Amino acid sequence: MSLALGQQVTAEVLGSMLTVQQRLGEGGQGTVYLVEAPHGAQALKWYNTIQATAEQREAIRTLVQAGPPRGPAGRRFILPLDLVTAPDTAQFGYLMPLIDTQRFATLNEVQARLKPAPSYPTLCEISAQTANSYRALHLRGYCYRDIAAGNLMFDPHTGDVLICDNDNIGINRQSQCQVLGTMEYMAPEVVLGQADPSTETDLHSLAVLLFNLWIRHHPLHGELEYNIRAWDLVAKKHVYGERTVFIFDPQDCSNQLPNDPDYASVRRLWQTCPQGLRDLFTRAFTFGMREPAQRVTEGEWQRLFWQLKDGAIACPSCCADNLWEPGVSAFTCWHCATSIPLPPKLVCHRPRGGTYTVLLTRNATLLERHLNPATPDEQASTVLGQIVQHPTDPQVFGLCNMTAAPWSATFADGTMQEVSPQRAVPINLGLKLNLAGTLAEMVA
Image 1: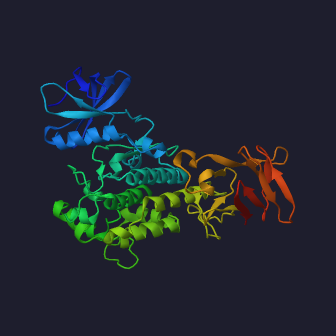
Image 2 (image 1 turned 135 degrees about the vertical axis):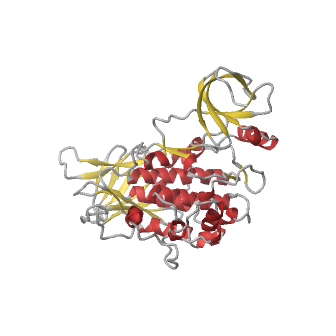
Image 3 (image 1 turned 120 degrees about the horizontal axis):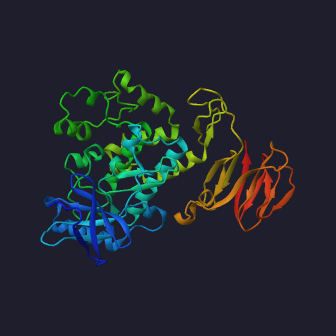
């Protein structure tokens, strides 16, 4: 039964009446409506008869009671707010927040050029936020089960992410699910019926999604898919389950990209990817494809994309965004091949071991997560330092202390200086900073 415009339905927990205002869209599981709720307009997903099972009803109740993961990672999930029922029918649905579709775009809209394409730094932010949210979900013991491009929305300007269609989330390896996922994103073992969706299969789906974001292509769509004449279920099972070969597999070229001009943009996007990103994609679709325990984790993706974003630098010739990564000394623009001079870098020596490098561009900021990777999400983006320009000499830049405590600075000649809050220390090679117990050094 479809809902009629003007019809009233009931939110189970809130006990309030909702009025159906408009039909927004339709999918395989049901129809989405705009409804008027006591606190304003919201969205209602109403299940088709075949999907309105007792198990799905209980799954929605569980999600409503559990709520989202904590912090920014959890707020990105558009989770069910309440179970919704109507008289004289066994069908039901769930209430969820309304999405600003003017601000947020889908990947399909971007690839169809209906919405602007994000810059490389923004794409890093989108990718890091996506990995961060799935990591938070998995740490709570849940799996998503249907990670796919259609369930991700993002602001092309800021990189803020929303994750939609969350009604298939369940407890990892325990709760049942009505769907196995979107075949193009399913792990091979799920395609072949050898495993049910889990956090491990989510990791494969996440890798496919990220590859689609960066390369705008499927990692398995090479000559095997190109030479198939009937793209039916049997063909999809063969490509996604039985004969899974990465299009850029360094050892197996049997599924390389076809010698066709239509694939030129795929090759170009792959070549412009930073080496660290290509390495993770290669691992995800070689070892990770065959061995679930070898799959790239959400934390690995998150760390990589944060590091790449912190290495964003504009080409001085064509202004194209480039992504530098630690260990790269000779750096040329991917767009015009101009040599890009690198500014000094701040190497932070983390208290628990390891280092993190921040490229000190004119727009660089020093964040809490740079010093302490275990910082809770709520404080991870707290600004500790900011690159500022000298008020009288525009050629001189410094790192301004944005905290409430003084820093200790030691220059290359051994002289020391206290850097009070809201004061800056000049950028000098060999300068060492004590940032509330964390040591950092400016290097070439």
